[in-house]
Length: 294
Image (tube, rainbow, N blue to C red; front, side, top):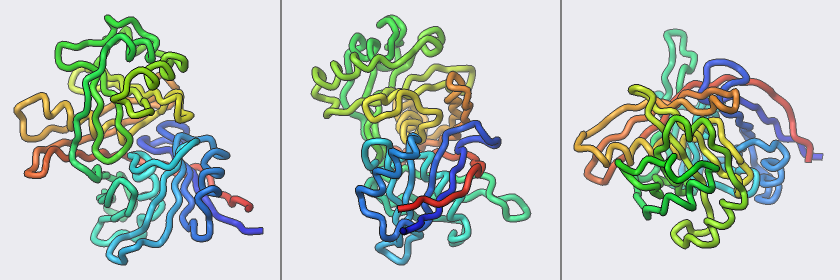
């Protein structure tokens, strides 16, 4: 029998049982693709990560991220949590993870004693803005009336910066509170809206003073609602910057409140010669340790 140690963490929080849960296998050598997917499904968390030696020794590790049903090219909270686990491998305060979505650079913030306070993840690609989508089918997916979507600034819009594309939509406070994913409407949208490419994740947000409140639904990939979604927060930060004339901005996003797992995601976005680049950062708390038996 083979044994594989793992740890679990709560990410984008400073306390246990808040934030978004993550499982990390610090040494996944010998695991097959099918075994990684099976373990991710067994943990039944939004994501599980598997750490392998890097292909380029200049980098820290090769990191593979699986949700309940498939491998992901990039995701935010898995990188934050994995960075905490691998913090002792950092060179000059930085980690570099090889992922299908590109090379992910992570900066660690430490206190005076050297303990890690936060990990700041740079999205591996510049912002890509995709198709604008009709409000009616998207509202149906979120279980809200079409009038709950605000379109003065933008229509529901696909965007990505290395992860799976997300549909970004601004909603009223009432709609954000009442929203609930409608699985049948998600399936209809995927079947009837070719721009989605066969997959659909919604990132709903509203302004709350200078901060954003957000929720994320992705039921077709096994996550009806996510407590903290870094790979949606970074394209949102970049997309909102693209709607202004500013060179850069920083935004805090509060997510997971409706699930009882409040999460705080700190984002930045800036214009560069190669497009708009974004980061997301936050804290992390270890929760469990154990071994998988295979």
